Image (cartoon, rainbow, N blue to C red):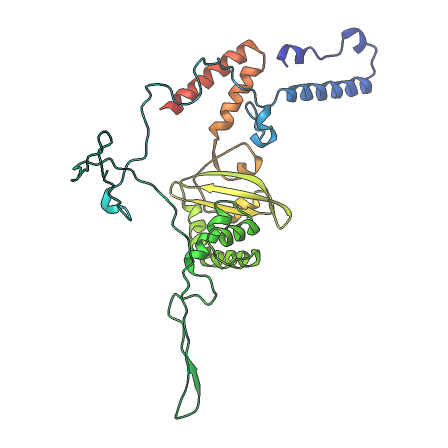
Amino acid sequence: MSSAKLNSLSIPPELEAEMTPAVRAFVESLLDRIRKLEARVGLSPQNSSLPPSTQHPHARPQPPKRKSKKRRGGQPGHEKHARALIPSDECNEVHPLRPTECRRCGTRLAGSDPKPLRHQVWELPEITPRVDEYQRHRLVCRHCGETTCAELPVGVPQGQSGPRLMAFTALLMAYYRQSKRRTAEFLKTLLNQPCCPALTVKIQNQVTAALRPSYEALAAELPKQEHLNIDETGTKQSNGKAWLWTFVARMFTVFAVRATREATALRDLLKDTFHGIVTCDRAKMYWRVGRLQWCWAHLKRDFQAMIDSGDPRAKYLGWRLRQATCELFEH
């Protein structure tokens, strides 16, 4: 909707003269509401702060693309891209292959090729779990009759899952976003490791407890940072609404799940000692932090909104600002 059309929404003078003040105020409120609704018609994640998830990926306008006359796939004469061969002594097995007879006359062949053609095949090994058994003997004292049982060595867990298996299970659920049931199915089917969803929950809790001190140490460093990028996104926690807060420092990133999007989450992690600069969107809860730098992604959307406004002057200014932004990021 162009600015000219928006400004044309006004009360004609001949009707305004016949209106009472109350009717005029009511009509003005309706016209103001119409202007706001019409301004929102053209909003998209490309020209506003709407999150990309609000728009279906198939609904995004595709840039015009000229249809190529070339066939799909590699073109004749293109450079071959193949995996680099590793040294022969690093292979698990090397199989020398020698022809036994001439392919033309059938004469028996002998000798070796100093530079044979090398063909390497990568394969997954058969995965079998490693199971270590610790037999804890209980011995009776000949002097007092007391029974003493041997302790497990340092580093051996009390449960039946080793530290590498626990770390891998937590990685599947946290980084690769797999459910408890799918994680258990993967371990059982592909790794031949007996597992059930209840065990994945137990492992997750144990790994969380082990990582808690390191997490809290990093979170304690947030108020000391000179610059932070902060954003939050909706998520679910225990079947309820929650927010995943992301704090990106120069050398590390801290994630925190909170039940609110309010500034209390910022105060919990940044305390009152943070005096750095925060790069964020224009959400109001960040205004209490201190010095702010608006996110360039949102500024770029503002420039696109100026281009889409329909006003020639705003369109020209938005185009110049967007062009300067692209040049900035090229450097």
